[in-house]
Amino acid sequence: MSDKPEGIRLQKVLAAAGVASRRVCEEMIVAGSVKVNGKVVTELGTRIDPERDKVVVNGTPIQLDVTKVYLMLNKPYGVVSSMQDEHGRPDLSQYALDYDRVFNVGRLDAETTGLLLLTNDGDLAHKLLHPSFEVTKTYQAKVHGQITQPILNNLIAGVELEDGPARADKARLLSASGNHSLVEIELHSGKNRIVRRMFESVGFPVVALVRRQFGPLHLGHLNLGHIRQLSKIEVGVLLKAADKKRQ
Image 1 (cartoon, rainbow, N blue to C red):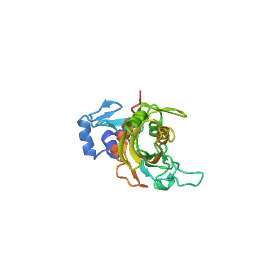
Image 2 (image 1 turned 60 degrees about the vertical axis):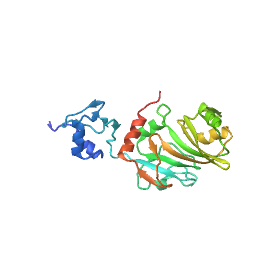
Image 3 (image 1 turned 180 degrees about the vertical axis):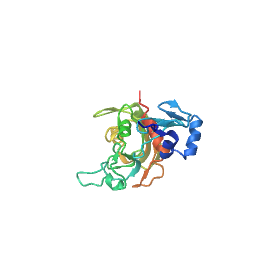
Image 4 (image 1 turned 90 degrees about the horizontal axis):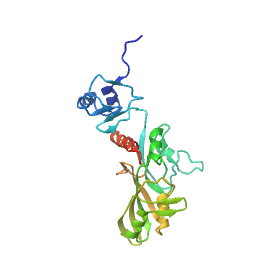
């Protein structure tokens, strides 16, 4: 029978996950900044099982599985949200050549550009998309016509679509020029083409649409057609957002 202790030292696991150097991780543990399975751990000799234990540092969940991949793509116009399109249209596979077995979290229609997440973390994807966990998405929509505050209020109050009611959490006018208006709209719904259909229902068809934010993640200055890995902090806040089930 082996006397070898089970598990891996907590500071070693944290360092391997990219939290900080092992020495800094030790300082975090001693300072009471680390929780394992909901309990604060301050002993440097603590050992954990990275595959089963949940670790949080300063309130942010840490992904201990280094095989998990999290990517942000600024999806271009005309690209379908599929890793392999059966009709031969441009798809997402061209952006994920360096990553094995990733898939898109939800969809943007071909005419919509902006933030799209790709990952191989099925559990996180499920939480981000399931109605009880749904996170906020923020879009900028260029619409035809001079939109007014009463119309925005209407979108927030809710409109009736063919598949049921839909409402925005927030909607505000960013600018207006000529016969077009630029509107920022925030909502939780994941229904197909929901933003386009909502604006269409109030008489303001969408000319161009871009998703700027998905939950706590912002598109920022990522160029159109470019893809990047999420930082450790971004992964942490995304995991945290996914664990906040809506009431």
